Length: 96
Image (cartoon, rainbow, N blue to C red):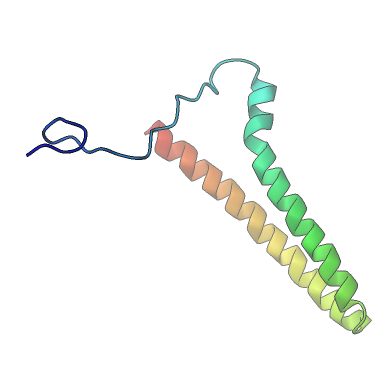
């Protein structure tokens, strides 16, 4: 039995593996910046969302703004811890 690739037992995958990353070569600062830009962009979008939410909630009352601001602080602590733990586990998994 032959598959589309023409070899017995081979799987014709439509997804090609990504090219080998070369983060271990070149400038350390440039590589760190290239890896951190998506996280910075995501946090910027979340901050803008929080600001817009506070503007709309400010129309309700000052107490509502205080409650949302307090929750946002706890959310950011959880978000930062999640980023740190997630990055650490990815690093540990790839090095094992």
